[in-house]
Image 1 (cartoon, helix red, strand yellow):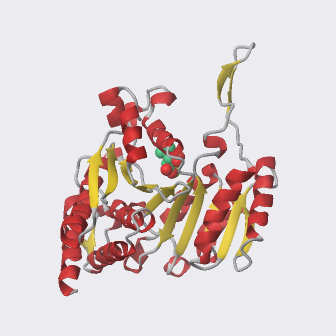
Image 2 (tube, protein in one colour):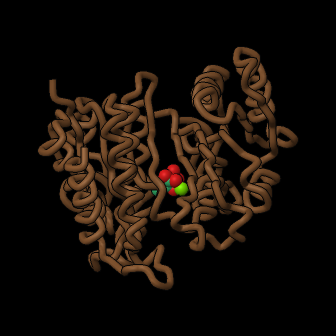
Length: 364
Ligand code: IPM
Ligand code: MG
C-alpha cells in the first residue's frame, strides 16, 4: 500500500525549499518506483492567515493519518505581534505534541566538499559527525505552570517550569543509546545537574539506562561545558542526548560547526517510528521569495524520512549520493558559496539533485 506523506510548506522560504523536496519525491516515485501519495496542508503563519490558527484541526488530522510529515519552516516578523498562543511556532509545537514526536534527531555532519564553509579551523571540524538527540515533547517547553501574572504590587512575574518524568527521560535515552549502537558507541548526556534537581534526576536515569547498554560508553556533561566543548573540540562527541531546551540551543551551535545551517536535516519521531521531517534552519524571511535559499537541508530531510519512516534505506542512500554528486560538481547556493564554485538558486539546486538521481539510475 502507498505510504502517505503530508507536505506542510509553512512560511518564509518554506514553500520554496519544499517545492524542491517535492520534485525529488516525485522523481523517486515516477522513476524509481517509490510507492507514495503526497497531500498538502497549511501550518504556521500561512494557516493563521487562512484559517485563524497556526495548526488547524484539519492539518493535525491529516498529519495523524499520514505515515510521515515533511515540513518547510514556520514563522516571520509579520506574525510576531500576535498573542503567543496563535503564533506560527505554536503550529510546530502543536504538531510535535499532537503526534507524540518525543525524539528529535539532529545530525551535524561536515560534508568534505564544504570544509571551508565552517568558521572553525578545518582540522577542528574535518570529518565531524555528531548526532544530537533532543527530547522534544517535554521539559520547559511544555511544563506547567507557565505564564505571566500580575502581582499585588502591580509588577508582572513570568514563569515557566522545567519538568520531566523518569519515563520521559528513560525513553529518550534509549533512543540515543540505540542510535549509538549503530555508530560510535558513545553517548554524552547533557544536563545541569549541579543546579537543577530535574536534571540531576535526568543524570540518574541516563546512568540507569546506560547499564542496559554495556557496549556504549556513557559520559555526562554540564550544558555550559558542552557548549564550550562543541566549539573547542567537537569531534570528541558521537551521540549527545539532552533536554528540549538544551537541545534547541546546542543543535544550532553544532549546526554552525558544519558551515551552513542550510545543509542540515532533522527527524522528529514517535515511539513507532512515525515522523515529521524538517530542515534545522528557520523560515529566513529576509531571503524569502528570492529563489536563493538552500533546499538541501529539506532534501536531506527527505532522505531521513525514507530511512526512518518509509523503510526505504536504498532510496535514502541514492538521494544522499545525488546530493553529494551535486556538491562535487561545485554547485553552491549563496549560503555555502566559495571561491571557484558555481552559484545556483533554489530551483536550480533542486533540479540538479533530480538530474543526479536520474543519472545514477541510468548508470545502474
Ligand atoms: C527548532 C526551533 C523551534 C524550537 C521553534 C521554531 C519553536 O528553534 O526547531 O529548533 O524552539 O524548537
Ligand atoms: Mg531551534
